[in-house]
Length: 630
Ligand SMILES: Cc1cc2nc3c(=O)[nH]c(=O)nc-3n(C[C@H](O)[C@H](O)[C@H](O)COP(=O)(O)OP(=O)(O)OC[C@H]3O[C@@H](n4cnc5c(N)ncnc54)[C@H](O)[C@@H]3O)c2cc1C
Image 1 (tube, rainbow, N blue to C red):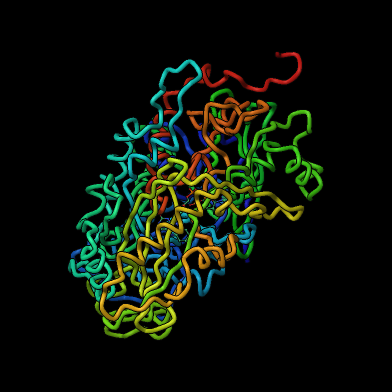
Image 2: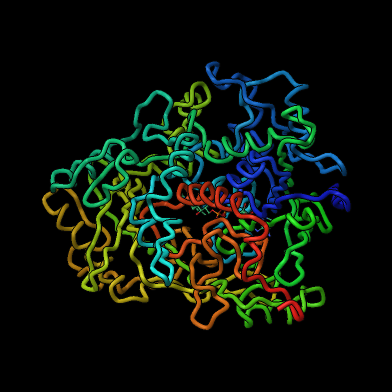
């Protein structure tokens, strides 16, 4: 029987962060570290074992043997999401348990901990993904970082310099978000989550036949081999290397195992012995934020609803510290836009949809709506799959590892985190890059991501991601049922984007043309690349890369103005408000070279610094204050 608890009417928070994904988790850590009382609200359930997640295949159930005697003891997680009692928060409980229970090795692994099970999300997404989004998105503790494949890249300098190149009208360079300004944040992230090219704890690369064949062939064609791509993030043109993952200790790791652990260690009224003088983090799971409660441009709290299976969660309105409290929306590219719409922030057509939904009677009145282009500027990597086959390639059935695993591989994984299951499914790599200069003079970055999977046992499917430099954009909207939709797909709406995709495949065909015994399956050798590219519909079902960004774009051009395109300013503050911020994939103006999670974490590190430096007075500039105050 579930328990839906009412929130306390007296507790207030300095910062309320909505969503525990790549953006929200680092914010929770940095803001609580700076001495603030922080509440992190996540709509989904726990994911990894450390946080009490329970979803797992049979071979992970009932583990009792020590997983790895060399592992440092891990703080004891509760085995399931604790029912929220009033007055006791999850963080306090976890701390209490850590003190009470003797440390045990991590035997409570879930499917989200084991790299080799990461593709199970495609076979069985139930309970792990958002049901109000028409695309794949993680809706559990960790967001995308709990369900993704863990690929983890240091950005190419152009990723910041072309997308976040903000030059004020007076010509002065704020320098706020260019590559040089992000050096410190990048170092902070990679010192906590360095990533690895050898996830198996013995340092071996298992099932490397496809990797060796393809990377060797490219090197044979003159491409440069990188052993540790993140040591040379600027080398993204005709280079090839191994996949780099955020994994550590043979497990998922990433923000959930680093930033969130230190944040939750700061318990209210304790932890540092200062009785509340230090910062604290309270974590609520199974709780959906319905809307930000605001008066004109000033938020006073958030309204929450229980969303846990069986009725767990919290219900009511949580208040911000009067005067100084702030909200950080980190609910992902779709979740953030939806939450802003429900809070009366966005284009009028979308706010009217919300007004006609079940939200209508309690929605903020239309005179207080803030007209911003939320949901526009939607982008994703353009994904184009090609398939080759080569007799050297050896397939491993990662999907089968769920209920019919190779027993020996589960044993080596459990004993010492080695073997194929310590690597991401389905045997991802090599990764290679090329920069295409278009006839419009723009450089477009391609990242190619290979995996051992396809129509034959000797197949490799290689996805070409078109990123930095893309000009096409789409739009997301909301339905009356309050579900979000990709209403305008962002793929290949610009002719030069199409040209780059074609050129990249042409170049790959050329690079691999002399490789003995290599067969092109898709596109077949008798098909032109143009015909092939044009034959694939530019829709999410055929082009999606799950790297959605851009719906609350950052920029200097205040989106309330006629020609303005930005939703947040350079402090990530929503235009027209003085205390609502957005920190997640939504703020990215344009796409980047690689899989985005590391760059989102870096953006959060940088945003935390800027938000903490922004005074309450300065934040008021340009705020909507309602009639009479103008
Ligand atoms: C299947 C898959 C594989 C991927 N593989 C990779 C990869 O290998 N490498 C990589 O770098 N990237 C990968 N990505 C992309 C990456 O995970 C995302 O880009 C990233 O997690 C986005 O971060 P975010 O903070 O914007 O949002 P998210 O990480 O999606 O976090 C948003 C969080 O907010 C919560 N939330 C939403 N609405 C509310 C609400 N109203 N109230 C409370 N909580 C709310 C959600 O439940 C979620 O936990 C993958 C994505 C998917 C789906």
